[in-house]
Length: 286
Ligand SMILES: [Zn+2]
Image 1: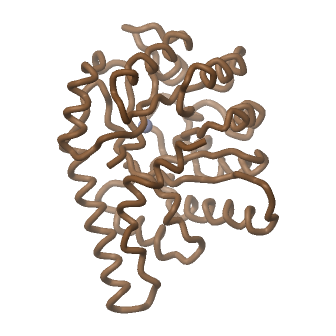
Image 2: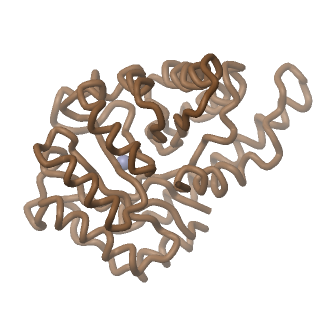
């Protein structure tokens, strides 16, 4: 199974050796996914490591060269003055995608930069939902703040955390992107992926899945991917296993309910396989 959301974070020690990380992930059943580079300084300063973009880029490429199955994503701050150089250099150097947390700027203020990302053909992974950082940042990361991405012709992006706590807004945003594609059929490759990474805790997860799968606004079964927010500083096998089991069971429960009561069309039998395997491959494919 694939974990689409793994970090290297400041202030919690060094990354574990690639082999140790791979073993911890494998113990949860995870054999691939995304590892994101160290964040830029504007997200969180790291007293122990250089956060110059070239060092962060080199660092994640080197680490993932020893973790087959795990793809390197490069974390950008699009407000930096040399961002276009960063984007083209990262794309050339073999990165699999980009990561961005809009913690001190509106997504709509950086559409040119995100267009440059889209032109590389690589996906970009955004954070959406209340962010436990040190800025007043919530207005920048609400799902609706990402609606202006509609202006970018071919952007392929994931929004993480199902917009926690704005799940309804998030689902409607997804449906809006679907409608935009339907209303003007053409050559666009615009695509939004739904990253289930918590955010939404076990208390509200069933409600979240019901909204995603049964709302009737749009069929998202090919666009949901699964992740943990675990770190290569020390991959949390227990957290990963608990959520894998919890989510798989909820989806099965919803499916059974639908089959018995026939009030809603039942989610497809292979939905779990899609969420944990094939949808992630579609997210990363060029
Ligand atoms: Zn994260």
